[in-house]
Length: 384
Ligand SMILES: [Zn+2]
Image 1 (cartoon, rainbow, N blue to C red):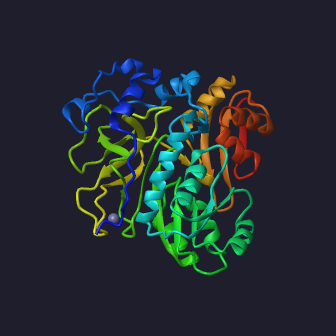
Image 2 (image 1 turned 60 degrees about the horizontal axis):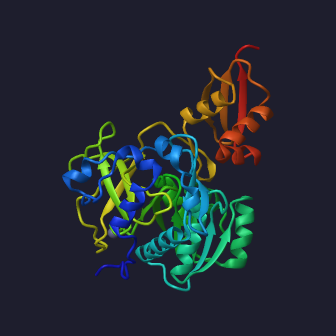
Image 3 (image 1 turned 135 degrees about the vertical axis):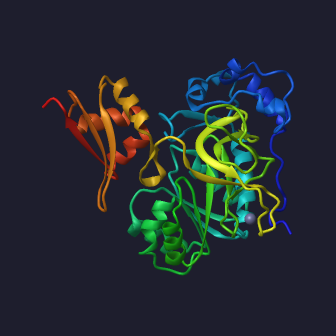
């Protein structure tokens, strides 16, 4: 019996293809009139899209956006963040897919869902809230400001049966959680370690379901087996390619996860390289779902994992500094039991306050953490 019923149809493949053909981000790809079928030789002969080229054109064609288009930030996982337009129908399709995923997690209508995610800059909070609403949940969106004591106060009032947040937030809260068991803990936005999973499950007295997705494309979620992310081929096409060339790896082998979204038209996502290592599962899942699964195995390039699900790469930080006139620097991420800090070394660097303002301007996802003292900035001027 397939636990996922009522699979919602998303965009026809051809609609995504025609939207891509009309979009400047795909101009260099010279897409033919007809879309090759996914998985075919012609499909694998198509070029892939990387974040740098997507960023150049992400907000192009604004004059054609439908009324109700929203702009969200992506995180800076592989380079500086970018703005990402999502039309009202795009957001609705993504929300319907998120609602489908709640069935994988065996969340019933009427669940009391506390969504503890950033609600403004990124789409993750919005689509999680809307997905649970469509699935018939009573949803309580709460921003991430504050700490375990603040979150506990909300929980005392809301009495959630589901909490949706990042692994690091739930891990921090788990030891201090007081209240009735929370049946389902949804995690997203960061890799979930075995230790975090065990601590969250025992602290809240429920089952942990991790979800995998990017701002550019929601991918999938775990069933109760917790062995890979189930995804709907009607919502997302997952290819696993060689990291250095546009060729698929053999079935079940490890490569770069590459996504095609069947949910988005405002900015079509066609064969988009995620920078994530992964593999497609070749076995069937004992849960009975017919949705295939993908395993996520970390990043291909070096990435720093920061609080609140924020990620940054050394390259994007150095790029931001160079753009502000501070070239020749080096950057390191320092993590101790009590302090998480970004260390910048270089010639002629200004005060930490000034440099934090520079970084906040170029990389708003880092700026928020710096402004709220979630992370610290050490500046070492190598000339002084
Ligand atoms: Zn399963």
